[in-house]
Image 1 (cartoon, one colour):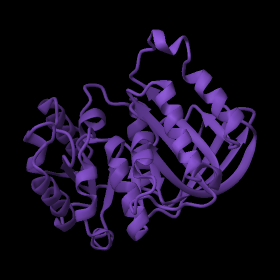
Image 2: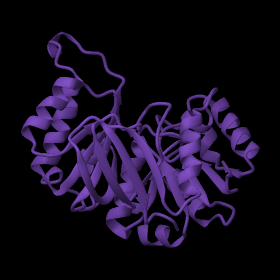
Image 3: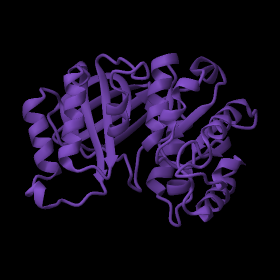
Image 4: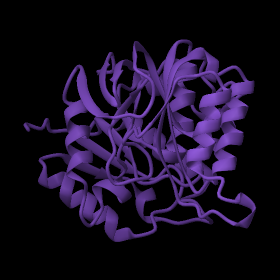
Length: 300
C-alpha cells in the first residue's frame, strides 16, 4: 500500500502518558514511514492525573492548530480532561485551521463538540501511545488508518451481528460514557438518521445499559438508522451481576429500545480498530452477518 507523507503532531490533551517509551516508539515508527513528527511538550509532562494543567493542555490544542508543520494532530492517549476545555475552545477557528484531528476514548468529547459547534469532521482512530507506540503495532489498524486518510472514500468489510440492512447516514459516535456525559449539553450534536458507533472500557454491562437508556430517553437512539457496537472490555462480573453479561445487555437493548443494533465493529480500546470519520458519511450494507461500510465526505 502506498502511503502519503504527513506532518503529524503528537500532543496530550487529557491524561499523562504512562509509558514515556511509547512516545519514542511512535515517533520512530511514524518517522520510519516517512512522516514528519512534531512532539508537543505535554507528551512528557505530568500534573495530577493529567498531562498538564488545563491552561497548558488548552495551549497544546492551539499549538497543534497553529503549527504549519502539522497536518494531522494525534492525541497521545485518552483518560479524562477534554471536558474541562470544551467551553474554552473556539471550534470555528479550529475548523478553519484545516487540521485533521484523530484519537478515541476521552477524545470523543472534543469530536462531538466540534461537530455540534462547527460541523467539524474528525477521526476516531489510533492514538500515539497505545497504537502507534505499541511494542508490536497492529498492521490492521495502521493499514486502515493510512488507507482511509489517504482516500476520498474508503470501503471496509467486517462481520457484524444483526439484522440485514441497507442504508446510509452521518457516521458519528465514540466512547459511550462521553456521549452520555454530553447529552443535554450544547456540546452534543443533533444527528438525525445517523449511524452511531459506540465503545467503552471499564464499564459493567448494567452501566452500559444505563447509559444507553439515557440516550434512549433523550431521544438520541430512535433518531439513528443503526447503532454499531464495538469493543466493551475491562470489567469483571461480580456477585451482584449474577451472570448479567454484555450478551444479556445487548439482547435487552435489541428487544426494548426499538433500534437496529449490531455487534462486532472493530473499534475501541482494542489493538485492531478501523479509523472512522466522525461527521462523514457511511453507506452500510449488512447481509447474513457480513457488513460492507463505505465512508465518504470526510476529506479536507
